[in-house]
Amino acid sequence: MASPDDLQFQEFEEAAELLSADPGASTLSTSASNTITTAAAGGGGGEEVKLDLSEDEEGQEESSELLGGQKPAGGFWTFEYYQSFFNVDTEQVLDRVKGSVMPLPGRNFIKHHLRSSPDLYGPFWICVTLVFSVVISGNLSTFLSEMGNPSYHYRPQFHRVTIAAVVIFMYAWLVPIGLWGFLTWRQGAERQVGGYSFLETVCVYGYSLFIYIPTSVLWIIPFEWLRWTLILFAMVISGSVLVLTFWPAVRDDTKVMSVATVVTIVVLHTLLAIGCKMYFFQIAVHVPTTAPTSPPLHITVATTPH
Image (cartoon, rainbow, N blue to C red; front, top):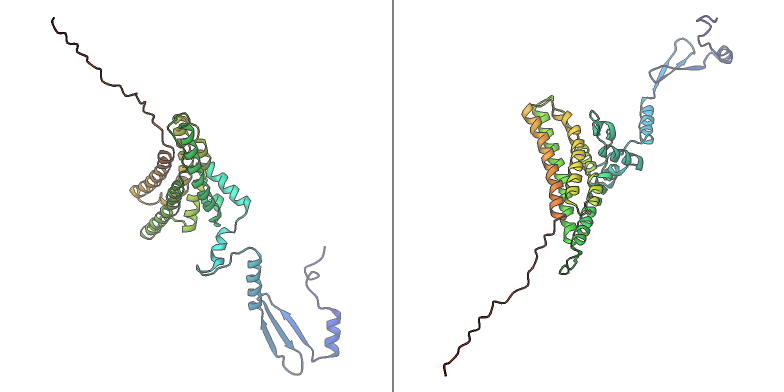
């Protein structure tokens, strides 16, 4: 077995021969602190020159970070700033959609699916798809329910697209803004209160609406009991995603504030679902019409005596 002395680095024979032949030669030694020391062996004393390579290595680290997929930082007025929010692949979107329809206790949507990389691509297209699915399914439902009515004439209701877009996008943006601002304020007032970024909050709300896309398509079936069962199922699934995500952020707050925050989240989510159901899937009420009857005629026959 080799001894420790045998394992130490030794000088090369060529270097020793060169130093013996030319005493004025200089040697280079690299230390662990990224500094190269040049020592001149001439004459009386040696003169050392140190070269610092820390700046070069910092530049290499920065380039390696860019090559490693780091998002470029820029001002909010630049296109690159918003482009980074849509930099997501299909596998990530499908994983987040799967997590939004299968919430599990103890699995935070942000911690297990976003992983500090939220996006706006999925929430944007989920909202757009939900707008058209609700409007188209509502029109088909009305058409099917009025099919046997001879006095019904189908008219495309394009104004419902605008109404659905305003309601859904306002919910998907304004509610997260309010919730994020409230959590930020409580985080400053109560140090133990956690919080999420604005983009993470918007991302959670956007993906939580995915379950309503297939639900709205199934609302075409003209059975009210089935429609209310589907809406209840969708509200439980979607609301669970929000509660399991935001409860860890508010549970360390006071009991009243934490419960009130979660209840407000659930109530607003319920109002959106029930409002879409009541407005876009109205029940057609047929009032039987009766034919007008004329009042009976009273004929009086007068007889004259002869």
